[in-house]
Length: 248
Image (tube, rainbow, N blue to C red; front, side, top):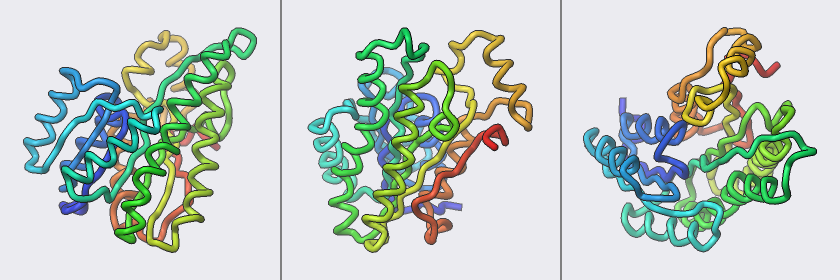
């Protein structure tokens, strides 16, 4: 069922992990997909080719989501190439985990800039087109850590908590133009980022999850499809946890 047929999605941090899973899932249900990452590397080229095999239009871009100028240029390029942006997924993100006593100012600033400022950059750049279209869906990637906090992730938790507040605020600003803004808060998801964690740490996370397994990027992508589609046409300003029940 091509529930996103005729729509164009822009996904930041789209070459790997959750962003890649969302790009593939969107293409499989008919969306044309533009995705960005810091570099247009072999991984990005391979994903672009994979997306095109589904029969949709797809293109990868090299762009720094934490730069407003880069973000504005990216959005303008995507609209020029695809004709519109109907769905924006603010997925770009990094971690710089350590206890607060060891956290440097640079570690704090890097995470806030990449994870939170990027959402401001892309949303501000894309909303002018969505306002003219009088329709659109913006999906912000938060985290359960942004709801409940986590020791050793004060910077990451602050960025994701900020993403939730940003989502709720912008939803109130532009809802009258039929533009919906929602957030997804994943729990422990198996990605390249979490693969680097020690086994005992990963096992500890899984023990806290009622479903007793880590999530897959596709679990998050399925929620993104719902929020991008007309099935969620009366939903805005909400945060959806995809966490196997770990967030109570």
